[in-house]
Length: 264
Image 1: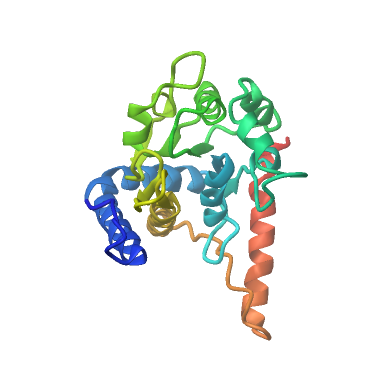
Image 2: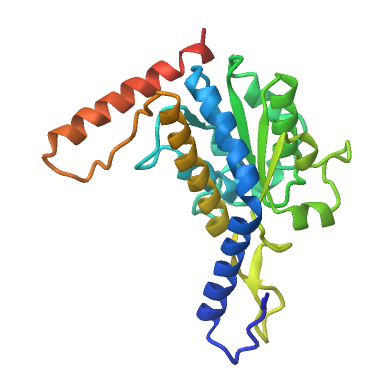
């Protein structure tokens, strides 16, 4: 795979071509584990369970891609902590430094998990391209400790080549029942330009978003095969469409009911 644009080729084209190659690799190599994840989640959701999605920093976008999002459905829960999720500020209030620091803080995940009463049919997706920071590692470990299966979305190449940041020496892949490789290179970025000391063009959003939607769609198909019709969030942009408004209300109510066991 060409990861380098030595300023002789349009860098936009280099990024596009290289990312398409990664997406093709996801399709060629990760379908079995994507299928395993979808089968697990369809089983859990059909039994009244929830599938929690957790990611720090930019990885939280994969949680938000699953839900709430047009075409999403009841059964997925985005476990996004604001303290670990930088949005647009870089310096000052809500800047980048604090969440990057907190990702390294051991014990933090357990405090998040203690806020819920998980049910026997719940499950987890933990997203981290590096797979080495203490918070996502401990989130997966904490989920397994509670007897909840964990699906990890990670760059295997980056994770396996990197030194663990957790004091135990463990990484995210050590606490995952299913590992889905997002195929990103170490460091995520894929375009190298003369004159720049570091690469640009991150790819985990593209491959991660594809994986999330593949899981979503196959889970929906499998739920229908179980005679469990997913309660879909429709597009709310159809102004005046009464059926869309009715479906939106059904989604809100279905989602509310799905959370009942967490607070009993």
